[in-house]
Length: 407
Image (cartoon, rainbow, N blue to C red; front, top):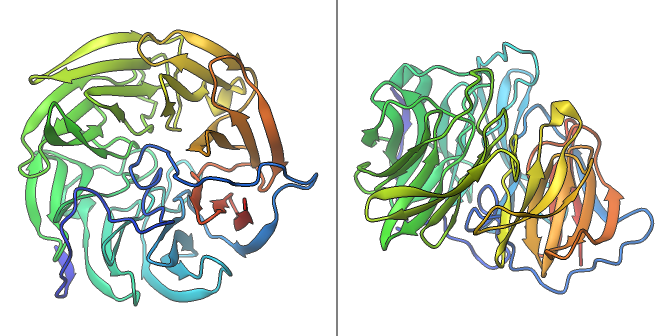
């Protein structure tokens, strides 16, 4: 049921609107890990880039996002899920929105939110692990509407709760809910009412992305069953491809990566990577294997004709940073024991935030791994993706949110 409905007017857009310097959603403006920042400072002093500010962080692995001159941070403090708007330059609180949560992590790993907020126009959309989908006015922190998706659609919370970062396409916000007949659901951004629902697929930990495939707008999901490409206006299936680990005690968490009419999917647990060509209603395999890039939860980035990402699992201690050829999957180089890392393609190279809390700058080249800078800015575990805007990097570990200058 809807808990709150208030008037709201939003502009229509294919994806969340982004002003200059914004990082309004998971993996940046286009959800592909690319930043338009240039002329950053990669000659760090011995103790690393300058720390501008830091704050105590509650539970959770939701990444920070930035839009409209505000840094939005979603975490859990005791029994409340808290959405904060902060001054990006100082970390000072602008507003705070809280609500109680009943979520309990059955594995006792972390009770906090894992889904990164999405900002579109003047609205912040958050999804808590207990299925609380909330719309908040960016300017004021006023709640606009909220509903509980696990209750509304009788969906299972999975191993670690709901973790799909909401995707805004036009006047709809799309979520992999995981209910029977409601695998993916589209809600009206203005009032939270259901617009359409599609598939029976359970929810994965992957967040969707918006794209144009074969000349048509598409919402690209990796659900628990595999690839689901849907018409964002109607929920009609455009493409599908089975893709999931054989072991049920596993996760799919990387966001699908779309380039022109091709889609790359990756997962660990003896699954690997697959490149698909999506044309004329059919998703055809270009290449697939479990040797090139098997990512446990981070999303790779494409630069030029090459793909960069981390191969392996954090719990095995043998994760590599890799470069592979996009069109063939051939591994060009592999940096051993690099660790699981979230990546940003920026200023002609790669910026990696590792699970151990190290920030690493390296070249984006198929000719070999070339490291340019490395500094410890957080502690282990650091699992949330970072945000980069206006020369400042925002990142969190299990206890702290930091802002460092890359200018």
